[in-house]
Image (cartoon, rainbow, N blue to C red; front, side, top):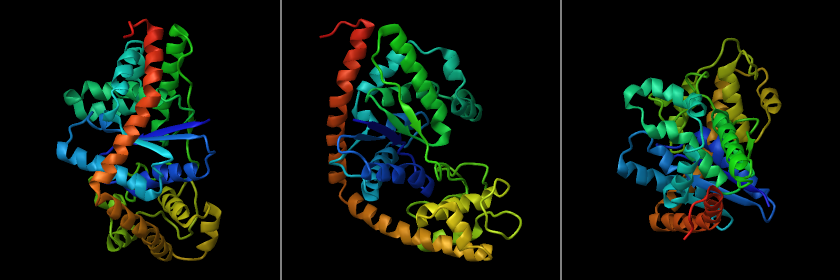
Length: 332
């Protein structure tokens, strides 16, 4: 049996980068999975509150993120979906990991260094502690594979280091997980700045394609998307903006890069952008319709999370108890 674990923070509207780099990848993996493989996908709401959140928005975003999981095709009878805050095993084990993890390991985390520079004295202890909780998320479920974006690989390497240190001190309790990065599309870049990742928090709304954007908005954003000098539609290192658009087209049109280049050989940037907008609308519109249908029944969506939390705890609690016994805690 293989266990696959991943999650997304319920903060803001999802964009096509979230869909391509995470949810679509999960759906494809689950469809091709062996019968006894285990898939666990979490709403990472504990991670979300490392920065201030509006409580009503956090609740809404958690429900909507679950609805997107379902709309994309994840089967709740086959996949465990749960909200991180519904499982107290996560913060419990995170404290245990905090007590064996050197400060230096945490201080080297790139995301902490980048965000703390921006936030200054308002930086929360939770932001510093974030990678320890992420390690807990993964290790509680004997995870074999973690599909993540490239920006999270450092955190997974830290997870592996924490597991190895715990095992060296207390015995073989935790499985060492492996990282899975999708070769094409795992890192979708901003439409306005190909040097930065497409982000839900980008102030420039033209830089992202939201999964809730209407056809007119999609067409306008693609028409305004940055391109590179020259006129050839090719995927090259010296053409980062165009390469990003080709990646997006290839994922949604289900074509490899070479096929996209061949299809648009001799055509103009405007021809390519028009076709890209059309394929995005074609694929996103039915996804939106399914999302609205599912999200309209909030009670159903929440019931999926409740069932998922029960299933998640049935897996994580025995593992937590194994770790507690290894450390020497008195068991009731």
